[in-house]
Image (cartoon, rainbow, N blue to C red):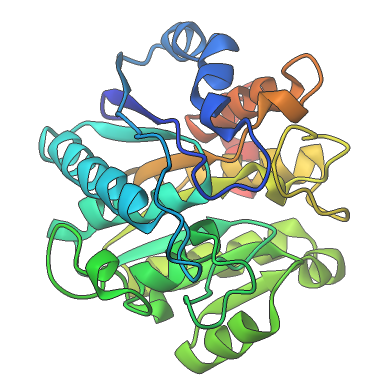
Length: 306
C-alpha cells in the first residue's frame, strides 16, 4: 500500500441538519492516524481545506452554488496533487457534495476510472430534478457529466466518469427523477432489496468483478448513511433498513483484496451533533481500518473467500 494522505473537507453547505462540517474532526478524534500507523501505514494528515460561510441562497435549484463550486475546485486541485505524489488520498467529509471535487481531481489522469458508490441515496439528481436544490443530491450525476456545466468542467473540461463505470451499493431512498436518470445513463444499482435477496458477498463480488473489467482504477465513495441508523446514528439523512455492521465491514474487507486497483477512498456524512458518544465516527475509523487490511486474525484462506 502507498503512503496515505488524509485531507478533510468540513462541508455542510447543502445539509438540512447542522453538524456535518464536524465530520472530519469526529473521525480524527476516534484516533484515525494512530490506528492506521499501528497497522504499519505511513500517514500524513494535511488538515482541512477552507470552506467559506454559506451566504448565497439566491439559486434555489442549487443552494450555495458559488461557495460549493469554490470548495470543489480547491479540493480537486489538492487531490490531484496528492495523487501525482503517488500517495493514497483518504478524504474525510463533510456532506457528499465533496465527491464532485475529489473525483474531478482523481479523474484528471484516469479517463477510465470507475466508482463504487456506497450510499442509501443515488445522488444522481440535476438542478431540474432535485426536489430540494441540495447539491449533496447531485454529485454523482455531475461527475458523470449531467447537470451544471461549471461543476462538470472542474479541473478539466468534460465529464469525469462514464456512468457505465459506476456501481451504487446499498440504495434505498431514490427520488423519482433520479431513478429515471439512473436508468437512462446505464448506472448499475444494487438496492438493499438485492443485498437482502442475494447477500452482500454475491453483490460485492458481482460489483467489483464488473468494475475491474471496465475500469483502469476504482475510487470508493462511502456515505455513512448507507449503514442502518441503529449502527450509525450520526448522519444527516438516516434511512432505516440499511447495511448491518458486519455487511459494512465485509464491503471494506472485500474491496481491500483488490489492492492496487483501488486508488482512493472518501468517507462522508458523519454528523457528531446527531451522534451518540461518537459512535458513527468510531465506526468510520473501524471501516477505514478494514479497508486498509485489518483482520480479526490474518488468514490467506479467509482473504481468498472474501
